[in-house]
Length: 318
Image (tube, rainbow, N blue to C red; front, side, top):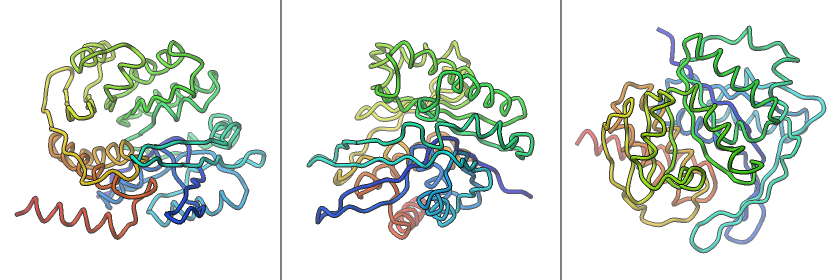
């Protein structure tokens, strides 16, 4: 019996951050990539692939090594001879909130659709059980390439892949709100699982309640809607019908919120691929996000995360 396959599409970047002693250190991160790493850690039997554009530079080589160290295959990464990987720097304030500077314009990942066409790789892709992308996956592309990207996802869905989408709205990536809404709606139209937050729906569409978000998503025939509502907790719906509500449990401390949403998405999707029910998947995903915010950087050290996962499993059995 083959393993289930999970691909994430988007951008992985060089992450620069400061240590406690104010020294600069580097790692690699990006929203959908982070989710994929956490999915693999939670459900090691998954075959995980990351589809993105990379360069021929030294950081690109280090990046793919980083993927492999985390169990992520670079088999479908697409190399550009003209573009390199993007870079971003994080500075956290005393409350753990993030402040970013980006150097990503014309990164290799922004050329993804042209690279897919140039390499002629799509016809050779195997069947993927789950395809995951985000608003950032779309936001870095030109509008022509956004349309090509949505068509790509539509073709994968037609071949039997389940499609998952997290809006992950970042205002600076869009011309204006109308521009963001246009492509959010295109993404919702092709997605089976959607993981929005109440804040982004409030900012973009003026939705003041979870009910308004649910009603909005009904017209896109979203089968599995998981609404992250901050301190109100998480609400899940099946074709608009309420499934469960999981209350918010605050972390013991909040050091760095960089990948809280990414870890939630990755663990949730991994749990669902392992046939866990929606409520259990949300509980595990929320617990994972609660761990992640207590540590510096997007990817928590493997040993720390594995120990946490084992404690959670032991508690569940007990």
